[in-house]
Image (cartoon, rainbow, N blue to C red; front, top):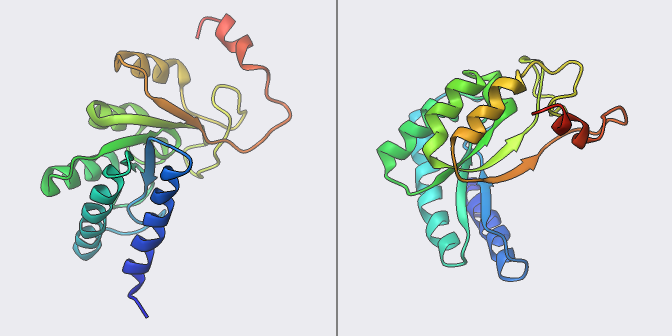
Length: 181
């Protein structure tokens, strides 16, 4: 039986191969799981896996993006450090809700800004990763009036995924746009 890490890399390769049938540009990858502590061995394992996967992905026209997640391995600062140390040529998927749980949306965005290729936009209460609808969630505490100018300041548009849990009480998005946001 193959070691667990090798099995996981093989599984991700199968997902990347799917691009040969249904083309896609980015594969979003997490380093670790929510709440995971920092460990140099985990960083080394991530480097080894991502080095292999990035070559495999590029041959299929796919770019691997690292997403900031709420753990000690994948904060915005750790991800920047990881890419600086490993010299892997990877971009970022900026997750607003995860940044809100870690170092704050603005601080994380500014650290990741130059390498952001995609965004995962959702809100939360700053304590639990609730994937709430941006702008309208009653318990959401991200200040979207401060976040949206950050996105615009980046210049070129990036791919955006709204990762939200459903609610029947969310107004139509165009109403918010008419309000000037």
